[in-house]
Length: 398
Ligand code: AMP
Figure (tube, helix red, strand yellow):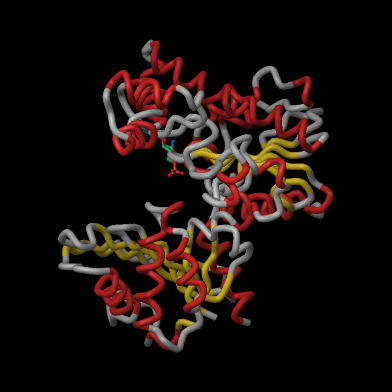
């Protein structure tokens, strides 16, 4: 079975074609600048990458180009588009209704339209991608996999904010949680690698990338997570502030005479590592600056590590224990320094890492960095959201 996974952004469209029998990626790539010029990069394992600039007015043209490259005599990997058995779509937000991966139909798209006000950035492009696929592949089953659905079983006292209750009932203000597909994948993969039944494990999964979130996974179910109504809540990120005292917002808006949109821009795009250092949102640059003595960069790393540590402590308390701590995504998988800083002085909780293993880890595979005798296992587990989407798609269309 061949499954195409689509991740549509407002001006981009990423894709991966999986051969599910082999569990392999046959091809992947992405279109950029849709609606404002256009380009595509198409990759096939073992071949040179193929890139070109091409006019892509809408997501329809982008998808058509993807299909023609996938079936191209030189760059293609399948003989015809009818070899694609199903399409899986990455969808950030399923609202309160879509608590599981689901077949894409009119009812699903209509519902997603109704929640665009609470998902204004990611909702419209995901809908565009699904509509384009339905138009171009009308006979191929399509599945939507939601980042929020992993959190659908969180208890109400963990998802309701202490605000007037009607903000929840009327305005849908609640914790939804994001990055769920990644947390779900790495928690399942970790249990598999450890040879344990996930039902017996209390885990904390740290997805640390440009966007970062931490999830408590008890017996395979997410019971709490750091991201909230939007992906803004939680720990400091590349450009997002994470949680702050909410009163700072009206105070700064009045003092600096800035609008809600401008404030939102500051919180989303000008804060986090970038805001603190004034240098970069990229962890690598911040680390290099800190190592050459930049005090604000040092401070940014400490703020990030301390935020992760606080969530680990809180989630261990919520779960009444901890068996495995998992690091994933760009920073979590690649940056030994943040893992070291986070796990420092956590012996009381049973967390001890082997510094040598942490520094000399193997990239791209699950890797155990636990110190001998540590009560809690500490693992680096590469995430693979696209494969998780493909697996869900496969099980729904089978
Ligand atoms: P992500 O959003 O998961 O792509 O992660 C982006 C962050 O991960 C950036 O802050 C990068 O500094 C960091 N990162 C990604 N890849 C690497 C790598 N190979 N080595 C070190 N840091 C990396």
